[in-house]
Image 1 (cartoon, rainbow, N blue to C red):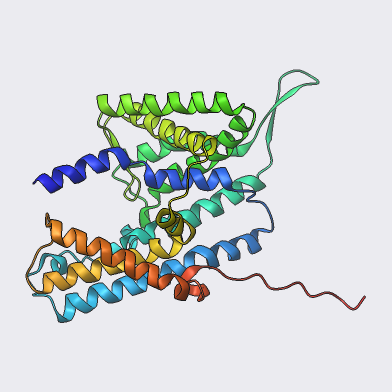
Image 2: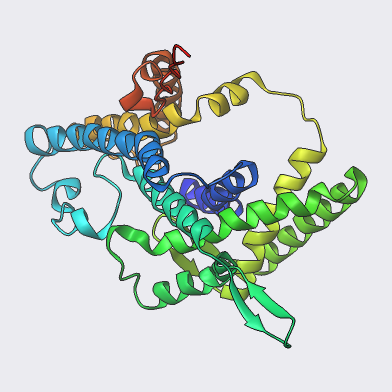
Length: 325
């Protein structure tokens, strides 16, 4: 019980992490322009090929144990449903893969938005007010919440994509805004945002789960907390030159490998313990062993995975061929 309460506290202060990845991608993104077909192929190679491959690996681990090792009465076996194929973009044995799928769809949507011309509304005979289509993205959080209110009806859990697109554009807007601020003002503004987030999070326990697009609690306050945490954290990280922690820096540099490979390792350990009729729920010793094994195995896999494009998404550009002229 104490472990569960501790985990609840951790999640209460880290629920915005997955949202922050979309925000960060928008902040550091240079462009979503270019040829539509080439852009789609590039993002498909980078995101969707690893999505399918690591999803298959996760399913292989899960169903190998489910069919050959686990007792048929085991809750893991009984939880398998056919609707999982179209209702969610995660895989049995590698649920976090939903992020790659949602990221891909969001990128394609943002690219198409960049292709849309602006709409002009005449004000006077010689003047007009122009609206860019991608400004409508700032209404997407409300679309995401309305979908949640309707039970998240979209297939493949695309309900969260609207929130992801909003965060991506918010990151781009925030980058333009803070580039115009002096470092001292940016530190003050970011600190105020973080302080406001802490106060709101203490007063209100609303949380957002991006994988399932669940807005739990007061939507206006939760919406405000997500914006404050994303903008405030990015501002502080860019204002201060924090010393690099080697382990954290290594995980950051190879985050793709750790992200796609960690869950099959966790699934393997959990299934192995379940096969011996042992639940790891609330077990501190299992948590410690599982954490160490996951980090060690993923770190060992990094050089091997990154050499294989269809595992890492790192497809090298074809060298340009110069003509004889």
